[in-house]
Length: 228
Ligand code: SAH
Image 1 (cartoon, rainbow, N blue to C red):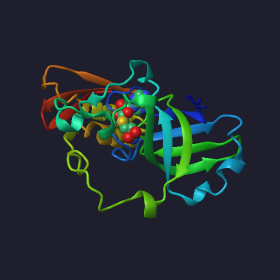
Image 2: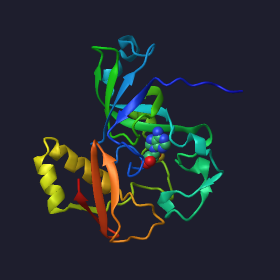
Image 3: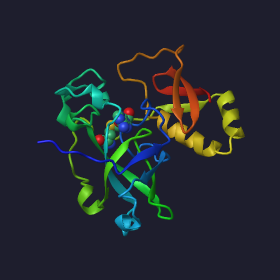
């Protein structure tokens, strides 16, 4: 049997490409998105009461990966990208049905014209189709004693610094303080693929909140933003 899913809306995200998006939500709390609901789901009635909740579950489609299908085993970055485990033992984006699940912060709800949800702490790329929204219930959804043997805590951060040139650009920008914080939160997740050796000559680039952020690895534990 097959079912059809209809998007409730498409996310407008500060993440304009997949590269460098943290591997789970909440790791970059400053990451913002807005979700404008589409008819017939854009009725204020459908979000009545939602303002009581600080966090939501979003169910969405990994739409950028759907065509690549899935494999029974994957290499999670957490295990250095060289050990394989079962796709259902992972949060891989390449999975049967291509559904993702993220808990995100609900900043505000705007019902002046249709319904727009302002969100933060997201791990989703621009244009992600959202197929369901549910309130996060801490007394049921948080299980502090739960076991996660090979992924017990958030990965360790690396150090992020800014070159003088990048720092100057940030100082000139009216959103500079916000951007500096966002860039730091995102890059300290160490976006380089785990299997890739560091090359101090290599420049990486990522589009983030309308900016082209260029960075380099000074060493395994330290990367520097060289230009914006
Ligand atoms: N919290 C979710 C997603 C974890 S994977 C879950 O556990 O189901 C997070 C990664 O998904 C990000 O690092 C990003 O690279 C990727 N991603 C985000 N939005 C995507 C999309 N629409 N299509 C494909 N990959 C996406």
